[in-house]
Image (cartoon, rainbow, N blue to C red; front, side):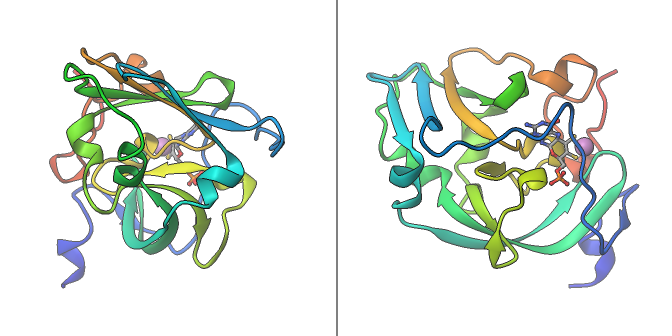
Length: 188
Ligand SMILES: Nc1nc2c(c(=O)[nH]1)N[C@H]1C(S)=C(S)[C@@H](COP(=O)(O)O)O[C@H]1N2
Ligand SMILES: [Mo]
Protein backbone atom coordinates (compact mmCIF):
# COMPACT_ATOMS: atom_id res chain seq x y z
CA UNK A 1 0.00 0.00 0.00
CA UNK A 2 1.36 3.43 -0.85
CA UNK A 3 2.19 5.71 2.03
CA UNK A 4 -0.50 8.29 1.29
CA UNK A 5 -3.08 5.55 1.68
CA UNK A 6 -1.78 4.94 5.17
CA UNK A 7 -1.24 8.49 6.40
CA UNK A 8 -4.49 10.37 7.02
CA UNK A 9 -4.84 14.02 5.93
CA UNK A 10 -2.94 16.54 8.05
CA UNK A 11 -0.69 13.91 9.65
CA UNK A 12 3.11 13.53 9.43
CA UNK A 13 5.07 10.37 10.11
CA UNK A 14 7.34 9.87 13.06
CA UNK A 15 9.64 7.02 13.96
CA UNK A 16 9.70 8.07 17.57
CA UNK A 17 7.01 7.17 20.03
CA UNK A 18 5.97 10.41 21.76
CA UNK A 19 4.55 10.16 25.27
CA UNK A 20 1.42 12.25 25.81
CA UNK A 21 -0.92 12.31 28.76
CA UNK A 22 -2.43 14.34 31.55
CA UNK A 23 -1.06 13.94 35.05
CA UNK A 24 1.52 11.55 36.50
CA UNK A 25 2.26 7.98 35.41
CA UNK A 26 0.38 5.78 37.89
CA UNK A 27 2.13 3.14 40.01
CA UNK A 28 1.10 -0.43 39.34
CA UNK A 29 0.34 -2.65 42.32
CA UNK A 30 -0.53 -6.16 41.06
CA UNK A 31 -2.15 -7.00 44.41
CA UNK A 32 -4.76 -4.26 44.36
CA UNK A 33 -5.10 -3.72 40.59
CA UNK A 34 -8.26 -4.90 38.91
CA UNK A 35 -10.29 -4.35 35.76
CA UNK A 36 -13.98 -3.83 36.30
CA UNK A 37 -16.73 -4.36 33.71
CA UNK A 38 -19.82 -2.59 34.97
CA UNK A 39 -22.86 -0.49 34.08
CA UNK A 40 -25.50 -2.15 31.91
CA UNK A 41 -24.42 -5.71 32.63
CA UNK A 42 -26.37 -8.53 34.28
CA UNK A 43 -23.58 -8.88 36.79
CA UNK A 44 -20.36 -6.95 37.27
CA UNK A 45 -17.19 -8.78 36.32
CA UNK A 46 -13.85 -8.01 37.95
CA UNK A 47 -10.52 -9.35 36.70
CA UNK A 48 -7.32 -9.47 38.67
CA UNK A 49 -4.17 -8.93 36.66
CA UNK A 50 -3.39 -12.65 36.76
CA UNK A 51 -6.86 -13.51 35.53
CA UNK A 52 -6.65 -10.96 32.76
CA UNK A 53 -3.26 -12.04 31.50
CA UNK A 54 -4.34 -15.71 31.57
CA UNK A 55 -6.94 -15.00 28.87
CA UNK A 56 -6.19 -15.87 25.23
CA UNK A 57 -4.11 -13.20 23.53
CA UNK A 58 -4.06 -11.54 20.15
CA UNK A 59 -1.22 -9.74 18.39
CA UNK A 60 -2.06 -6.92 16.01
CA UNK A 61 -0.11 -4.50 13.84
CA UNK A 62 -1.62 -1.04 13.62
CA UNK A 63 -0.89 2.51 12.52
CA UNK A 64 -1.54 5.07 15.22
CA UNK A 65 -2.61 8.64 14.54
CA UNK A 66 -2.43 11.31 17.22
CA UNK A 67 -4.71 14.34 16.92
CA UNK A 68 -1.69 16.60 17.51
CA UNK A 69 -0.45 15.52 14.06
CA UNK A 70 1.95 12.63 14.36
CA UNK A 71 1.36 9.16 12.96
CA UNK A 72 3.39 6.06 13.60
CA UNK A 73 3.13 3.06 11.30
CA UNK A 74 3.34 -0.64 12.10
CA UNK A 75 3.08 -0.55 15.86
CA UNK A 76 2.73 -4.05 17.33
CA UNK A 77 0.40 -4.71 20.24
CA UNK A 78 -0.39 -7.83 22.21
CA UNK A 79 -3.04 -8.43 24.79
CA UNK A 80 -6.66 -9.44 25.19
CA UNK A 81 -9.12 -8.70 22.41
CA UNK A 82 -12.01 -6.53 23.52
CA UNK A 83 -14.36 -9.21 22.18
CA UNK A 84 -12.65 -11.79 24.34
CA UNK A 85 -13.60 -9.74 27.40
CA UNK A 86 -17.12 -9.22 26.10
CA UNK A 87 -17.57 -12.99 25.98
CA UNK A 88 -17.12 -12.98 29.74
CA UNK A 89 -19.84 -10.50 30.61
CA UNK A 90 -23.57 -10.50 29.89
CA UNK A 91 -24.60 -7.10 28.58
CA UNK A 92 -28.10 -5.80 29.00
CA UNK A 93 -29.72 -5.14 25.61
CA UNK A 94 -29.66 -1.35 26.13
CA UNK A 95 -25.86 -1.25 26.29
CA UNK A 96 -24.74 0.68 23.20
CA UNK A 97 -21.83 2.85 24.38
CA UNK A 98 -18.74 2.34 26.49
CA UNK A 99 -16.96 4.72 28.83
CA UNK A 100 -13.37 3.69 29.38
CA UNK A 101 -12.20 4.57 32.90
CA UNK A 102 -8.52 5.00 33.74
CA UNK A 103 -6.30 5.77 36.71
CA UNK A 104 -6.48 9.37 37.87
CA UNK A 105 -9.91 9.88 36.31
CA UNK A 106 -9.05 9.93 32.59
CA UNK A 107 -11.99 8.73 30.53
CA UNK A 108 -12.87 8.31 26.88
CA UNK A 109 -16.11 7.28 25.20
CA UNK A 110 -16.74 4.97 22.26
CA UNK A 111 -19.72 3.29 20.67
CA UNK A 112 -19.75 -0.38 21.62
CA UNK A 113 -19.84 -1.24 17.93
CA UNK A 114 -16.48 0.50 17.33
CA UNK A 115 -14.86 -1.79 19.88
CA UNK A 116 -15.99 -4.98 18.18
CA UNK A 117 -13.36 -4.86 15.43
CA UNK A 118 -10.82 -7.68 15.50
CA UNK A 119 -7.97 -5.23 16.09
CA UNK A 120 -9.34 -3.62 19.25
CA UNK A 121 -7.58 -4.91 22.32
CA UNK A 122 -6.51 -4.28 25.87
CA UNK A 123 -2.78 -4.42 25.40
CA UNK A 124 -0.02 -5.21 27.86
CA UNK A 125 2.80 -5.76 25.36
CA UNK A 126 4.16 -3.38 22.73
CA UNK A 127 6.67 -4.25 19.99
CA UNK A 128 7.32 -7.66 21.56
CA UNK A 129 8.23 -6.34 25.00
CA UNK A 130 6.17 -5.44 28.07
CA UNK A 131 4.41 -2.14 27.60
CA UNK A 132 6.34 0.60 29.41
CA UNK A 133 4.64 2.53 32.25
CA UNK A 134 4.55 5.80 30.30
CA UNK A 135 2.80 4.09 27.39
CA UNK A 136 0.11 2.61 29.59
CA UNK A 137 1.40 -0.40 31.51
CA UNK A 138 -0.16 -2.48 32.95
CA UNK A 139 -3.07 -2.18 30.50
CA UNK A 140 -4.07 0.13 27.70
CA UNK A 141 -6.84 0.14 25.17
CA UNK A 142 -5.84 0.21 21.50
CA UNK A 143 -8.47 1.35 18.99
CA UNK A 144 -6.62 1.71 15.66
CA UNK A 145 -9.58 3.23 13.80
CA UNK A 146 -9.73 6.32 16.03
CA UNK A 147 -7.32 9.09 16.95
CA UNK A 148 -4.95 7.92 19.63
CA UNK A 149 -6.52 9.82 22.53
CA UNK A 150 -9.23 7.13 22.50
CA UNK A 151 -6.53 4.50 23.07
CA UNK A 152 -6.68 5.03 26.80
CA UNK A 153 -3.68 4.18 28.97
CA UNK A 154 -3.86 2.64 32.48
CA UNK A 155 -7.38 1.29 31.97
CA UNK A 156 -9.22 0.13 35.08
CA UNK A 157 -12.85 -0.03 34.03
CA UNK A 158 -15.25 -0.45 31.15
CA UNK A 159 -18.67 1.03 31.76
CA UNK A 160 -21.49 -0.07 29.48
CA UNK A 161 -24.07 2.65 28.84
CA UNK A 162 -27.36 3.18 27.00
CA UNK A 163 -26.57 6.79 26.11
CA UNK A 164 -23.33 8.32 24.93
CA UNK A 165 -21.47 10.65 27.27
CA UNK A 166 -18.30 12.64 26.51
CA UNK A 167 -15.01 11.49 28.04
CA UNK A 168 -12.12 13.67 29.25
CA UNK A 169 -10.90 15.20 25.97
CA UNK A 170 -14.31 14.97 24.38
CA UNK A 171 -15.58 17.35 27.09
CA UNK A 172 -12.75 19.74 26.31
CA UNK A 173 -13.66 20.08 22.66
CA UNK A 174 -12.16 17.05 20.97
CA UNK A 175 -14.44 15.44 18.42
CA UNK A 176 -16.79 12.86 19.86
CA UNK A 177 -16.02 10.27 17.18
CA UNK A 178 -12.36 10.95 16.28
CA UNK A 179 -11.98 9.24 12.90
CA UNK A 180 -8.54 10.32 11.53
CA UNK A 181 -9.56 9.66 7.91
CA UNK A 182 -12.38 12.20 8.27
CA UNK A 183 -10.15 14.56 10.28
CA UNK A 184 -12.59 14.50 13.15
CA UNK A 185 -10.18 16.38 15.41
CA UNK A 186 -12.19 18.95 17.27
CA UNK A 187 -15.87 19.60 17.74
CA UNK A 188 -17.15 22.82 16.28
N1 LIG B 1 -5.09 7.45 30.91
C1 LIG B 1 -4.75 8.25 29.90
N2 LIG B 1 -4.73 7.73 28.66
C2 LIG B 1 -4.39 8.51 27.61
C3 LIG B 1 -4.10 9.88 27.77
C4 LIG B 1 -4.15 10.41 29.10
O1 LIG B 1 -3.92 11.61 29.34
N3 LIG B 1 -4.47 9.56 30.14
N4 LIG B 1 -3.79 10.65 26.68
C5 LIG B 1 -4.24 10.16 25.36
C6 LIG B 1 -3.61 10.88 24.27
S1 LIG B 1 -4.12 12.46 23.99
C7 LIG B 1 -2.71 10.27 23.42
S2 LIG B 1 -2.16 11.05 22.03
C8 LIG B 1 -2.19 8.91 23.70
C9 LIG B 1 -0.69 8.94 23.72
O2 LIG B 1 -0.21 7.66 23.94
P1 LIG B 1 1.35 7.46 24.08
O3 LIG B 1 1.83 8.32 25.21
O4 LIG B 1 1.55 6.00 24.30
O5 LIG B 1 1.95 7.92 22.77
O6 LIG B 1 -2.65 8.41 24.93
C10 LIG B 1 -4.01 8.67 25.20
N5 LIG B 1 -4.37 7.93 26.37
MO1 LIG C 1 -3.26 12.95 21.77
